[in-house]
Structures are given as C-alpha cells and as structure tokens.
Image (cartoon, rainbow, N blue to C red; front, side, top):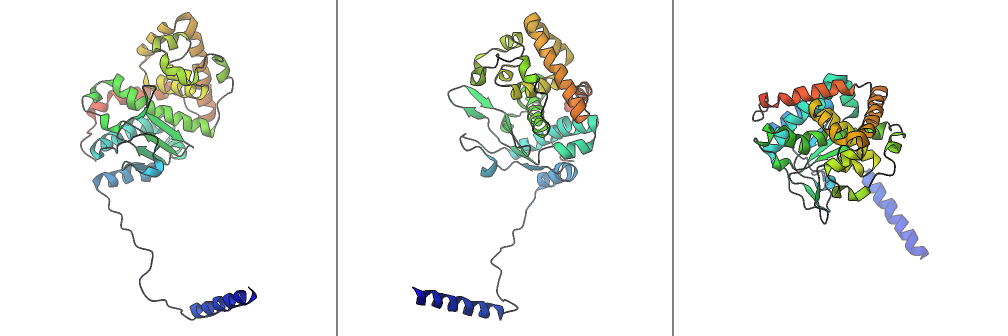
Length: 294
C-alpha cells in the first residue's frame, strides 16, 4: 500500500510538471460556442420584456420550469406572441402607469413560462391556470386556447388570463412583504382546503369569498380578492356583493379594506387607480394589433 501511494504521488508530480511546461495549449477547446438564433418574436421579447423589465419569457416549453406531474403541451408561438402583447399592455404597463416603472422592474418575476395546455388535476375536474414560484417564476397555462373570438368576450378572457396574471403577481408581492395576519382571521374557520371546487360561486359569495378558489386558504383568498377586484367592472362587483348579501358582503368588504391598506402602505399603490387603469386598458384590447410585432 505504501509503495502504491508513493508511486501515485510521483505520477501526479510528473504530470504536474509536464502540464506546466505547456504555456500555449494547442487544439480546439472542449467548450463549444453556442450560437443563439432569435426570430422576430424573440427579438420583440428582448425589446419589450427583457430590456425594460429584465424578464425572460420562455415559450418553448423547458423541462426545468415545467411540473412533470402534468401532461403538458408546448405553447404555439403565434398565440404566445398575442398573449405576450396583451400581458405587457394589461399587466406590466398597467402597473407602470399606476405606480411607476421602477416598481415593475423591482417586483416582476424574472421568468415567465408559457405552456400551451391547462394543467389538469386528475380526480378533481379542476385545472391549474397559473403558478408563482419563489417570486422568480410565473407559469401561465392554456396559451393554445387563446382565440380571436375569445378576445371579444372580456369575461372569458379575464377568467383564463387577465385575472390569473394579477393573481400570480399578488403572490410575488406577498412573498416579498407579508400582508397583515389579521386578514386570515376574517374568514377563520370557513376555509375548506382542497374541497373548494365543490362549492358554487354564489355559495362562496354568501360565505364571504369572491370565488370558490378563495376558500382554499388565506393566501389564495388574498390573491383572489385583489385580482378579482382590479379586473372586475364596478357594476359586476356590486352585483357580486349583492349576491353575497348581508351574510357575505361584510366579510368581503373587510378583506378589501385590509388589502387596500396593505397595497398603499407596503407598495404605495392605490388599488382603485390600478383598477381604473386595468379596465380602461382592457377596453382597448380591440385596438391592439396582435398580428404584428412592432
């Protein structure tokens, strides 16, 4: 054993001296040079997402950002382009108009991952529309379901896309600055965890929640409250509050008051101003050219 060790040491020293004698190694490098090929959409994303907001939009589905427990389909590039135009206009630019571009740069996710299909939860009959991970990555699903006809129906496109964008962004803000813990006590004892999908919307309203999904847990309740409020026209909001009635409306209003204070105190953001901006921009979608990347 001792001889072997000494022999190995001698061999290592010999290799070491030999390697030091070559100051200019010849031959090709083992590290290949990878050329990045960008098409028109890729260059548009650089100009409109990466340079102004430091966001990397990934629409060519990557395993590292995909939840492999679902059977997922890559996003169509043409529909990804349309959704990217809409998301910028209704999401990031809306916040920038409301509270300034520095807020957006500092708080938006670093990566937006677009998936073509929904993420179906087998056995529940539900599907995931979006996720936010660690304040860094937001995944948006159902890109391939986006159609020109859908864009004329605000309620549908809001349910699947706009509302989801604001919901997931709310999670990022909450991860950076936690909300008042009193929020979770407002509807304490009424959360149903994974059984939320068994509750109808009107029943959820009467219990003090804006959607059935809000009944899953407080953190989702908060995100649903804010995202529903800023994307819902005042007349529709009042209709929902009417459905909630005397049993549910006071709980919804109490949550809204805490959210309004949280956003103002923590982020210097007026949610009523943001709502006005979002709804105005939503009404202007028909004037956006979604077929040209300008």
